[in-house]
Image 1: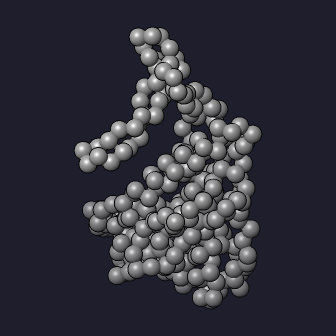
Image 2: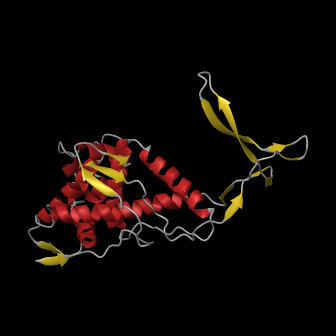
Image 3: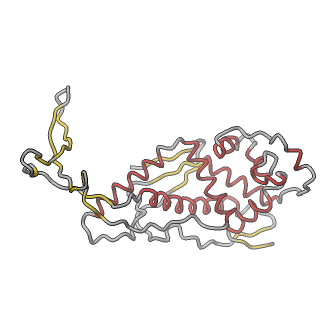
Length: 277
């Protein structure tokens, strides 16, 4: 019995075993072991999600006929089922999730700007259609296994600059207005008196990052999500393997620092992502 960590097990399954039956096209071919797993009733949603279309056999599929690959190993099928089943998990992003604990906090402007950037990244992720989020989760696991590397997570903190208009620092003011129902609301308006050439009394300035960090934050979300998914696959298959034994993996879900609640995958009949209060 061969001992592996889950990363090695996934690489073995998706590089050497699950492409079998797909000929030179490997995993992408509708006749591969991987696609045949997806073609079962529980895997159809993953099948459609990955390619955003219905997969049919290629027009020249007969070209692969002479390539004898044999049957995939039973343990690889177990792993494949566990990975495909990730599409039926809900991705929970808890309130207070902090992907940037390593960013400097000596500047009192940093926490507010960081919180806004994290909120934008989470909103961008959760606004994706559910089927795309399912596809993304499965693809994270398969892509890393095939490429043999972990998702990137480097996120250098950008510098902070003053918000500008036409190359000059901008001024802002808060103003109370009432809607058609008489309800009071606060809006933000231009705080610079152009006629007088100076800001209005009570005007203030605002700050922003020199570069938008949302892409880097989402990369860290992917890195943590990938690690959580691998842990789930490990737990799912550990007692079902017949010719392999899984040893504990030392994957760090948060190599940038661990602070606050973690992402979670919750099994369910549907797929998706949600925030918790």
